Image (cartoon, rainbow, N blue to C red; front, side):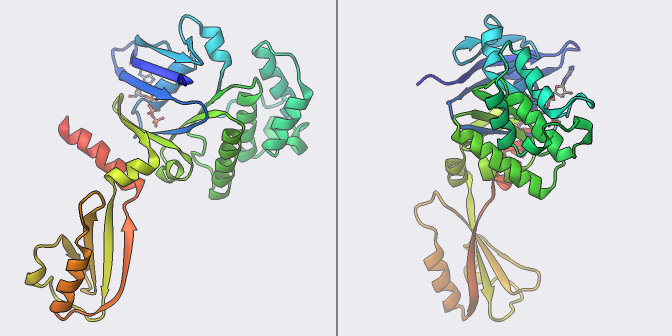
Length: 311
Ligand SMILES: Nc1ncnc2c1ncn2[C@@H]1O[C@H](COP(=O)(O)OP(=O)(O)OP(=O)(O)O)[C@@H](O)[C@H]1O
């Protein structure tokens, strides 16, 4: 199956000469949720803006649904919905007319049943006759999503959908994204919240200084790059790691009661059995043990720092 979004060597040099995208290549399959992670100024918004036809790339190509974003702009744009970072709504416009008007911009006839379905899905149906200025910040965000969906796009770009929203609304947004995916919409979102990528993305792309460092299935990324930590709580406090255990990658907590053992999940063996035997041989008694997988956040920070060290 050909990808719904196909980006090849996309570069963007802004007027002042700043290179915001340095040859990004990326394929996105229909129906997936891709999270683009990256620090401030990495180029995430520039990439999204280029794919939505708001920014003109300096070189490279991109297609949406097989349509070239430059040569077949209209066809490509009609397949795309964009929820920008900033909320931009006409304050005196009613919710329902905002949606109908946006649909009209795409040259699509009014469709009351569709408008109702979208507004219900976003829990905005009861607010359909409210003026947008009367809505809470969370509701305004939902209206922005409804606006982006009203011309039935196949690809939805969400630029930091949950920046500055409370935990409850963030979870609501995740639920909405899951439902859209179930409807067959492909979703590309940018986020600073790694837990957001961890919670909802199928694949994760890491972008830094205009370069896409990797794009990978979330689960395999975590398995490939993840390290695990075994936390060993000791029954009795020790002053230092016994010298007989010096061969293990062990850290002793400040209070001397917990040892942390880091191991690689890709390795042949974890070394845990040998370690536990060695602890017993040293006369150390265990109170409890726990394992912990390194988070996407740790992986992300490691990747971005490695890039900086190499620069
Ligand atoms: N119109 C512009 N003219 C010149 N430089 C720009 C313009 N827009 C963005 N940039 C620069 O391009 C770089 C990438 O910006 P972009 O907004 O794409 O980053 P981002 O990853 O979305 O960041 P954030 O997470 O802060 O939103 C930044 O250094 C920014 O200053």
